[in-house]
Amino acid sequence: MRLTTRTNLAIRALMYCAVHEGETVRSAEIARACNSSANHLAQVINALHAQGFVNATRGRLGGVRLARRPRSINIGAVFRLFEADVPFTECFAPETNTCPLITACRLRSAIRRALEAFYHEMDLVTLEDLVKGNCMLEEIFRVADRLGEGSACSGPGAAASA
Image (cartoon, rainbow, N blue to C red):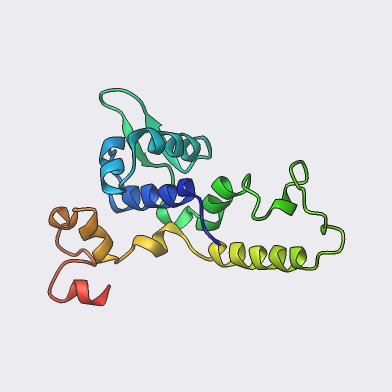
């Protein structure tokens, strides 16, 4: 199984926003930190905004910020947003399916069960689970120097416990 680039970028962008929770960040900052083109990121941000995951404001003073708390953002829901229209196999898209085995194929139901199990597991994960106390992630996003005293990532040995 392989996630689409859009799903991967959506999760990265949400993690960036969660690390910067309470701040409005520029799309260009997210694109740089997530190794993405600004144009590709804009498409992802538009979809996340349309579904209420982020607030996005255009213009010189605009930017992106989480629309909900990280613990309220379900990763399974984000995956479904970007993956639902992408059939896992040809036989899952009846309008373009050319497989002659569809009526006798037992693999299709096994794949469907595996996908359901995958989404079930992703439904157990929140954005908070991905970022809270994740010192290495904060370092990657270059915010460790802006964290105040009392952060889960400040103090001796904090990075080792992440």
